[in-house]
Amino acid sequence: MRILIFAPNGGVSLSTGGGVNLVLKQAEALAGLGHHVTLAGFHALPREELERTHAIALPTAVQILPGTVTTAYNALRAVPLKLSAYNAMFDPRFVRWVEGVLDRERPDAVWFHDDIPQVVLRRRPRTRVYLYVHYPLAGRDPRTCPALTRSTAEAANDAVLHALSPLSVVAHPFEVCEGVWTNSTVTARVVERIWGRPGNYLPTYVTESGDGHEGGPRERTIVAVGAFSPGKNYTTLVEGFARARLPGWRLHIAGHERDRRYVDRLRALVARRGAERSVELHLSPGRDELRQMVAHADLAVQAAQFEPFGLALLEAMAEGLGPIAYRGPFSGSWLDILREGEFGRGFESVEELAGCFEELASDRAKVEKLKAQGRDRARAFDKGAFVQRFEEIHGVGPGAAVA
Picture 1: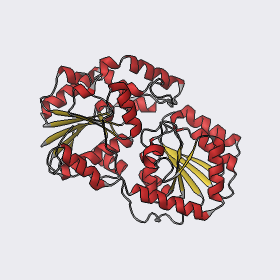
Picture 2: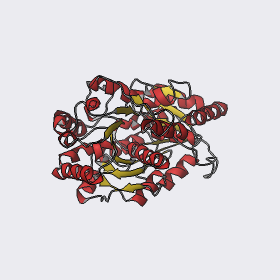
Picture 3: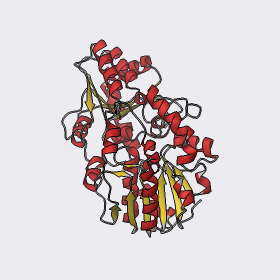
Picture 4: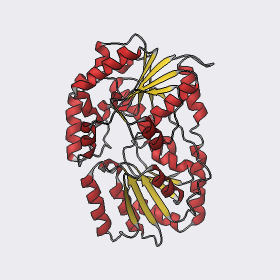
């Protein structure tokens, strides 16, 4: 079977992020089942860079359509505030590109991620269409998700995109698709609210890369990984760490520099709290730097109030770090990964986070127990189950029924 998979954000960007990570895992799984798979992204990193960034070696049966990171795309990422990949949908070249890919590939099945471009309604492919939703454009509205935290510019940009969404994405994907899948219960709830049905739950998987001690002893280090933007709630994390006053402990925050003004605010906060020697910001680190950072750490924190899933936290748990996540109704890390406290700690305020840090720092046995809980939970997100579900969806396995 020839399967075409479009990049997240309706096909716009095949580059970094948890959504792309799942796309590569999906392609790997389908190729392993004997399918010929083509990945398509309007802006796509070269194959070698994708594999290096996501630590995934794609089978030869996976083809990546020739893609380049254009000058315009680089310029967009260099803007000192976080915009949206959906902005690219209004580039006339994007519509022509989608049409060309569908006409040229003529696949047996097409997977879109997050949303389906409106052009598909005009040129409906004579094939099965599926949708996997990490988080949809229509959900980026505070009336749908009150936990959204964005800069003023980002919120204004999202409001414009939301208003123009009938021109860019399909309004009712369930009418177009044979099946809709979601990455988390947070996304499923939003999907049900905006499209009337929750879709099927199919989370990603993680694997352990060894014993996790290649970088040396793990002691008194906390890490948080995710793009530098207001939605990641790093100000609460820095405040909680500073208030806890933990002698000898360090906090490392790593991620893509998506919002320079936010980075400046964080640096000012670190200086104001006198924590320059214990808090370090790692801007756009490489994979090796991240691996070493995790190898030295004890605890991982997901501080965002809105996080549809939380792959960075799950990956840290697979490497033996004890998990702490924001406790709230729009935190997939709390609801799906930690199962509301069964496999990790939660917090809602600066004071509660500081208290959690103080408690763990004073009792090494509790840290070790939390780390063991995290690693055990990460093993539940199994590659075998992930592959089997795609086997069933495409009718080559024992349970081939599709909703």
